[in-house]
Structures are given as C-alpha cells and as structure tokens.
Image (cartoon, rainbow, N blue to C red):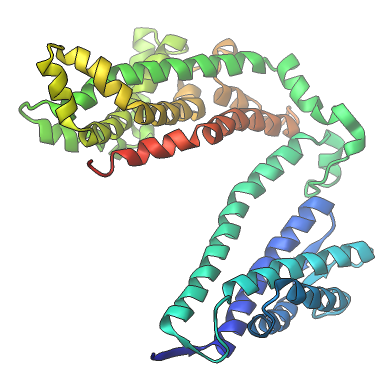
Length: 404
C-alpha cells in the first residue's frame, strides 16, 4: 500500500496543535473557576505537545501517558517554559491543578487521536483518520466553549453582588457561604421588576403564536403538497421569500400601520404580527413532510367516504405528529425570543414580553447582575424545553427528507 506520511511527523505536529488548544481551554476554565490568573505558554505547549505526540505512538496505555505528562507539566509550571503559566501569588494547589488538568486534556485525547497509527509510515487512510479525530476533538472543544462560556459568565454574574462586580468584574467565582443570598437578584426581579408578569405574557403569546401558526400552516402546507392548482410550484418555491427582506426594513411600515390602527402597544397587535414571521417557515417544513407521507393511505380514506378535511384530521395529522411537534417547538422558540417587534411596538411595562422586560434592565441605574439574572430566566425555560423535546424536533426535521 502506498506510503502517504510518517507517524513520527504526524504525531508531534498534531500533538503541538492539540497542546495549544487544550492549554487555552484549561487556562480559561481554571481562570473562571478559581478566579486566579492562568494563561497558556507557547514554549511549554511546543515541547510537551511534541513529546505527547511521539509518546502516544509508543505508549498505548492512556493512563501511563497522562501520568508522565502530569509530572512534567507540574514541574514545568514553576519555570518559564510552563504549558500553563500560573500567577506568582498562586499556591502549589494552582500549579497542581494546571499541570494535571493540562496532562489529562493532552495525554488521553492524543492516545485516542493516534490510536491504530503504526510506528513509521502511514497510509493515506491512517493519516486521514488521525486528522479527522483531531478535527472532531477540536470541534467539540470549540463549540462547547462558544456555548458554555457566555452562559457560565451570565449565570455567575447574576449571582454576584454589586460590590463584588465593582471590586473585580472579571472574577467569575462565587461565594457559596452566602447561601440563598446568592439568588437575591432573582428575588428582586420578581418582587421589584414585575418579571412574573413578563414571563406569563411571553408564555401565552408564544402559545397563541404556535396555535395560530399551525391553524394556517397545516392546511396551507397540505394544499401545496397534495392538491393540484395553478401556480402551485411557484407558491411552493416562494414560501421563504419573505425572509429575504430583513425585519428591520419592515419595522417602520409596521410601526406606522399599527399606530394608525390602534394596535401599537397592545397584546393583540403582537399576537397578530408574530405569526406573520413564523407561518412561512412552518409552511416550508410541513409541506416537505406531507410530501413524504404515502399518498395511497389518504386515497384509501377518500375511497372510504371521508372528506378531504376528515382525511387531514384522521389520517394526515396523526401521521405527522413528529413534524407538528418540531414545528411547534421551533415556532415557540421564535416567539419566546423575539425582541425587535416587541421593543418597537410595546411601551407599557404592564404589557412587556420577557425580552422587552430584559431590555428595560439595560440601564446605568439598574445593577448589572439584574440584567444577567433576567437573561438566565429567559434562557433556561426554552433551553429545558428544547432539551426535553429534542428527539421530537430531530425526528420531525428529518422524517420528510426521504420519501418512503
């Protein structure tokens, strides 16, 4: 088999890049958790990364590699070539955490990345497999950090006091000895800023948006998918054209129209305009799913004497529950998180949605931890809903992609 590359070159190169990645990740993580200053070191990463890449080819037991790297990383943490530099006032515990954390994040993954790679010449398949494992690991770290770091900062800031934020805005540790006082910002939001009303308003507006969207999109999507009429293909292809026009372009006409008709600053106006933004995507998702359902089942229902509406109600909708669940969840999240229209149309605090209420906290007169607590309150319910119904959403999005 043709030789493509050499493992004694591939291993150190991947090891160096992986060491730089994990040193940055571990330094950021330890800085957030402990409040001390940690930063990655280039020289230490080059040395230990190359050593880890070579050692992973010789030492197949991951725990042995981690043990050796831990000893080296802890020893180097007291020198200028440390893979993770620790602030001078930190104690031995910080050096130990940095060294062991770096070794764990470097040694075990390198054993996995280079698993199956022979010593010496590599075929193209073996080289590509190692690189793909490396890129997969990098993707996990990158996207996890992109999601987790902002959320962590948001939660930790919401648990701070004003004095702690002023003393050190970059300290994201928490004092657990405060007990229930940690949640004082949340208590004040509901007691002093009417956040219970904002939550309820956003909830029932989102539910109404889902119901109205389904009421219009189900018959519309069925008509596009099943019925034959003039302009059917053009309508099917143009469903999502509305999203080519940015909402900010439509903001002024909507504001003028709602002001003239008396719908501005009213819940009724919000309930009317939200489905306009969600019906097109619901139509698009459902018509693709309806096309994937076997037409023979519906034709059998028609032959048995059912009307078209009865066929939709008794046959099509029960078969489409996964798609309906995914569309409902998607529409709910859009309505729950919508900000521009609520900010533009609502002025009365008693009618604010949750996002509009959070925007009202963005003031120099209101402590920053209250704004972060409001953001947590807005994020956690929809996150829990999404995680709980994720399997239905995934099934609904993919079920109509292949015609059965």
